[in-house]
Amino acid sequence: MKGSVVIVIFFVLGVYSGMNNFIPYSAEQNNLSFYVLCCLMFFVGFSIGANKDSLESFKKIHPYYFLLPVVTVVGTLVGVTFLSLFFANRSLQDVLAVGSGFGYYSLSAIFISKYKGAELGTVALLANITREILTLLLAPLMVKYFGRLAPISAGGATTMDTTLPVISKYSGKEYVVVSVFHGVIVDLSVPFLVTLFCLL
Amino acid sequence: MLLGVATGLFFRRFSLSWLQFLINILIWLLLFLLGLEVGGNKHIIDGFAELGIEAILIGSSAVIGSVVASALFMRWLTKKKGQNIK
Image 1 (spheres, rainbow over the protein chains, first blue to last red):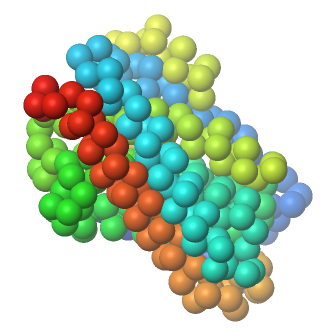
Image 2 (cartoon, rainbow over the protein chains, first blue to last red):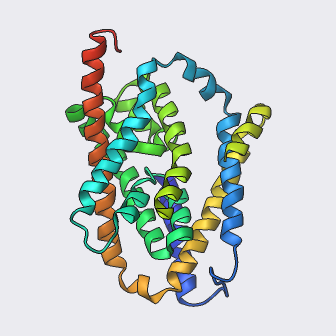
């Protein structure tokens, strides 16, 4: 939660500076954010690869749970597709691209603004922050009505870090390893799926 | 990203805390740049409330979709494995 507040503060600072032209910067004229994004992707990958504990513990997971990331991805895409039936002003691909952020707001917002412009990027940022906040707030209700895997699915790519504490608390400690595994896999799917739906 | 995973495998003893810090700095920088772009675009600023509502709807439907899917998956699991699933 604290992390997302800091992120929003940086975003708002950027908006404010942009509105007042404090910093002469034009996204069309330079590729600074693309290079920073490449660095970021490298380090995110690095942190997954270097995390020995998580890679070791995945061996203990029951094989059926390997399907959970797929369940999350399919459920999310079906959910947003259903919504897009009522959205006249956005194409299905746009909505699917935003949905494919799976709560990874920083990364998906940057990717989408690269491919589809800052407007949809802003939607992606806010939509995926919404997802994380809903998971944090509603985890106990999700467990009660939809089972112990529900907050893990709802958390999407965030279940290896920001939403892990609430999952451990409400789904139970025995689901922590499943949750981290799920987070890593969904995390890795974000750049691929977002790019795919942006290019469709 | 995959290159990073591969490199990470070779540097397992690396301290992860500075790495997390570095990732945070990069994310902050990128979000600031996105904000700059948004702030410089009058069209987006004018429609911000509308974009926010749209975003909340997409976020909520993504959560509902995945939660329902996980409930169906849970039911399938219990059927499949009986009492063996923790």
